[in-house]
Every structure is written in C-alpha cells, then in structure tokens.
Image (cartoon, rainbow, N blue to C red; front, side, top):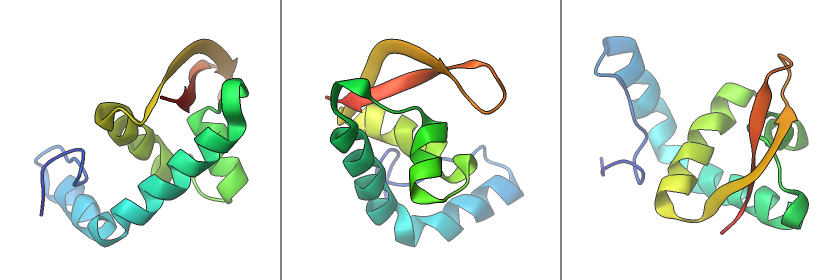
Amino acid sequence: MGIYPDAPGHRNMETSIAAADAIAPKLGRLQRIVEGEIRDAGAHGLTADEVAARLSMERWSIQPRTSELRRKGLICDSGQRRPNSTGKLAIVWIAA
C-alpha cells in the first residue's frame, strides 16, 4: 500500500485500518470520479454532500476523497460555503 493521499488514511485502529484496506483497490477510481464531478461543476463547485448525491453514494465514502484530492492539489476550497445535510456550512470544492 502507498502513502496518503495515494493510499487511504486511517487512525491506527483495527476498524479504521480494515476500512482503509477495503477501499484501497477502488481508491484511484473513486478519486477520479469525485474530481470529475467537481471539475464539471465549474466555479459553482460542490460540497462533499452534493458530490455524494450526484453519484448516489454515501457522504462518508466521498468526504475522505475530497481531503485526498485537496492534498494532491487537484481541488481547492473555493471560499464558498453551503449547508450540508445536517444544516452546517460545508466547504464548496472547485477544481484547482
């Protein structure tokens, strides 16, 4: 396994490591899909919740990908904020 952000992160706990190991084979594909959605949104950008909704996936599968893509320099914080599903303001991501 590679090093974050090219490999999924974990919290050095058994369950977290197992989750990272499970997602590792799909990581590159998921990152490309998430990046593509954000790129397609243009200057409007997308929150992690909005990406998840577009892809019919759970937010918990998408949010870590936004952190990885940010670390890779492929997306960035637009400075905009929009409410997420809990009503809290979330980062709106745009392509770098």
